Amino acid sequence: MAKNKKKVTAASKAELMVLTIQDIIKQLIQAHDEGRDVNLNKIKSITSSKYGLPSQPRLVDIVAGVPRNYRKSHQITLFIPNNVKVLVPKLKAKPVRTASGIAVVAVMCKPHRCPHISMTGNICVYCPGGPDSDFEYSTQSYTGYEPTSMRAIRARYNPYLQVKHRTEQLRQLGHNVDKVEFIVMGGTFMALDEEYRDYFIRNLHDALSGHTSNNVEEAVKYSEHSKTKCIGITIETRPDYCLKKHLSSMLNYGCTRLEIGVQSVYEDVARDTNRGHTVRAVCESFQQAKDAGFKVVAHMMPDLPNVDIERDIQGFTEFFENPAFRADGLKIYPTLVIRGTGLYELWKTGRYRSYPPDVLIDLVARILALVPPWTRVYRVQRDIPMPLVSSGVEHGNLRELALARMKDLGTECRDVRTREVGIQELHQKVKPYEVELIRRDYYANGGWETFLSYEDVEQDIHSN
Image (tube, one colour):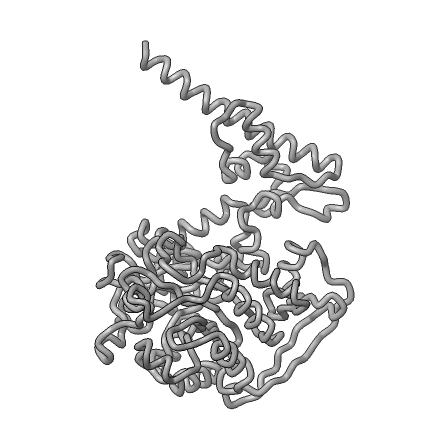
């Protein structure tokens, strides 16, 4: 009798969940008829309480339950008058992920040791993760607890499964995955053997096309004609693994952009943190990469040992103004103190101290104010879970706080991402009105760069 009662209770909960989802969708459709905007979280909360549910329905289940006649190209459309708005921005999780029209799919290669250990005897002083770390099954510079790392571990670092699972997940959450850009993470990919690299890249393309290829060239060919297009591949690398032979291989893979670990423009800081390469090598790798046709994104780390706030500002000013640097994009990764690193030992013994939270926000705000309009700031902090961080960043929304600080100070961030039409429409609810072609010329890495963009100059919106 007890078992039967338990089954009835479980079935009742499932039925209540279905009724709740139906009610939520009904309210969304009613809002379309009346031309009203809605707060999905509020509707979920009120409706779940109405049916006595202990938890709210998942977003995936709500998206899946919308009637077919309200779907459009695998996405859900709310036909508000004049068909101006769609339901997707209201339903999809983290709409900023595909605000630019491209779904970024991060994948990780298998764990391997950092290549410069053989030369310097150790890894970078701040670097967590890797086969020899406290986080055994993680890749170099990751802990294994980041969302991308956990997806990779679940897939046992199989590239095909990583892509299949992630694209399906994004699709279920309401995102458009017609255009996909891969980011190959997990340490220095080009330090791995050629056979493994070819296998990895081949499977990225095959996961989109559904074809089983024998080589990279065949995989790229079929991927070009698949419904879900690979519009680019980004590979993380080091300056000393960005030589001509590496660049040639990456072009064959279909790679369009490189993320190069710079961390600091100061020679003494690179030496003291055990980077294993010189700043001159950074400048040379930038020039060679751009000459080969790659876009270059630099990783920079403020708050490194032996660097105070003024020196940090000077370093970023040098990065943006010195033609030897001037990358196309930037990821700002404030230094984090994580257990098991050399920096953790320095911090524990009082030989290193992180900036206080407010000082770090001020610093990032000042850095963002320096960014030229042709540079895109992709990230402002690592996605390492906060419980693993002993010292460093204390806020998970550092970019948001820095932009708010800039607004208080009367300054603006003019990087490509902040001014992009999709981001502006999402956050500021504004659209471009009068668009014109803007040309910006600047000297960088031994040649002249021309940055062309269509912009609404009055509203400072970047539309392409």
